[in-house]
Length: 336
Image (cartoon, rainbow, N blue to C red):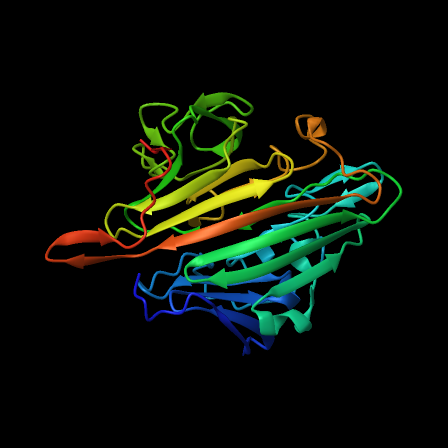
């Protein structure tokens, strides 16, 4: 790493489409967050390679306000959203849980007293359920850390559902890496792949034509799939590019197990081409799912904490040789 690059980030506020945008910037990376739009992370950029890791809708739409209950695809469709307390719209008793939850469509509160310490702390009290979600972002060098607390504000147990929803821009050469001990994934839903919903299929290739790791289907037809890793010990994933050498590692830690969802669309959903690696508290898109019911509820007045870490690696070509600036060699990966 270049010793002249500062490992610590500085924070400033700018504006995009009339919305206050908080910028965390180090010598290696830059992150942009819009608290008024669900604390959405609109940009995760590696300043060394110039790669913008996050996807935005190619139709040129600007950032826009939404209300809980709006269809997710009617929103800004960009970057990383927080899905609480569901992804799929569903009914929990007498309460309707909106599409992709409530948190993405509400304005979060910023604790401005922590900004001078390089900590972007935002929070939201939900209206559909008595829950509070808190998130703190820090950026050091090329590592973005997200620390969470989900708090039950009531005297009744509540579903502690949360999912991170990062939409990544696919580039030629990208592939998803999972730990070597991941052998299969559960198909939650799919279109265009002829795979049975609920079935466990081989990772990365459930059949001769499909490779989830390389995001490809030799049949050439539009397709999409939502998957969940079945291995209970999976707490990391990565995106690696064999052409550019760019890499993004995702690690997650929690006092209780987190699951990993994988979303891929190659034209199968609204014609879009992107993918997502989604750490989540439940191996389902709703707390009402039968499988999700086996996960622990958040007890009265209890708090659950966890953290997610994004580590960016940039590479450069010298004398025809690809040099990786911070490649990890301490873990085993499976992608093909």
